[in-house]
Length: 223
Image (cartoon, one colour):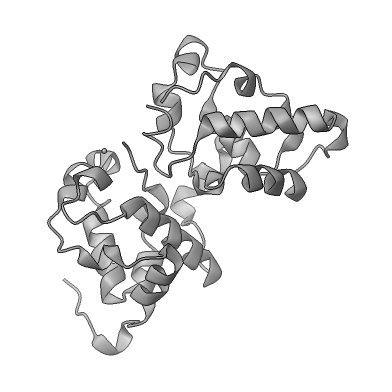
């Protein structure tokens, strides 16, 4: 095990996280491991360990946290809305996109990414940008079960990428029926999903990006 050098730790890192989250409840974590025991990503690969990541964040091991693949793979599980790792209300997103289509013709939007479109949806449905295409929504979606082409994950991804024309033309927004575990298991009430979101934001602000080993995530909408 590598040595932990105090002079290499960022003592203020946990305070940045708490400030961004709006509370410091994650500092209550005593590394019991309940989150890791119930993490679906952990079941796929043992190196993905939410308990370890939270601990590193509290200790101020900023760069280690930023370089962790789990930071980018964390998917908070708890059907569609409730199982979405970032509490994205997919039905509300669909409603917002439908309203946008009603207000403006599809031809108003460019063929490529549109910042205006993305911001328009975000103003109506907070938290959409937190989606990290884990696919939990698609896995439990009855519409997607009947027709794999109707994929809520891809739909939300289009919205977050600002692909207005693609989102507006997607049938999923019209057929979504708005059908309504890690965090709920934590004895200290640590808001793990929110911690992950804030860590991603801080990583990007500090010049870090999604690890190259996870580049496949960037191609989800091209599948």
